[in-house]
Image 1 (cartoon, rainbow, N blue to C red):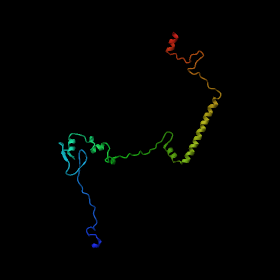
Image 2 (cartoon, rainbow, N blue to C red):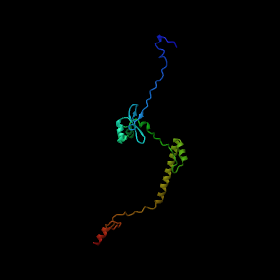
Image 3 (cartoon, one colour):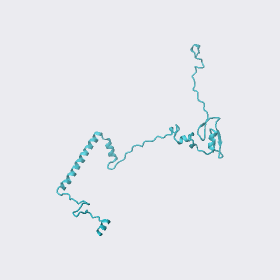
Amino acid sequence: SSWHPSLGISPRSAKPETAVSAMVIKTELCHFTEYRIYPGRGQRFIAKDGKVSFFITSKVDSLFHQRIKAVKLRWTQAWRRMNKKGKVDENTKRRTRKAAKFQKAIVGMSLDDIKKKKAMKPELRQQAKEASAKEAKARQTKVKAAPKAKSGAAAPKAKADKGQKTAGGKKAGGGGGKNESLKSKR
């Protein structure tokens, strides 16, 4: 690989460039706000029980020691999570599973019969439907014709309605409430 000035490329720049990797900075999370704390920032608090808390600012440290809950402050991540704000919850959304269709036998039909009916072609199903409708209609006409032949000789009896007036002008049907018994005594 000889270099020539007319090419306009220096031998050093002719080498393939390697991908520059980004510098990794170790960050910690604030115990209260859950913000990232970069090196040289924040305060570390170690409780009597040995639990280490790292706070981003003195304001956060003060709020923690006043026992104010992070969930009650709108600017904290805890509040945002509680109230379903931002992109934090988008990736934790759960997909609802569709219930798988399940078929079971119904009264008067076994599962095999249902499957056979589903497998039938629509034309055949329509023909079977029409045939069963005709059969049912024929059965009904036979049932209607039979009672008419029997009841043709005997006429239905007329009943006197309750509450109809009789020849005396009083209503039939008795009743005789408390008021009527008092009127007859006077």
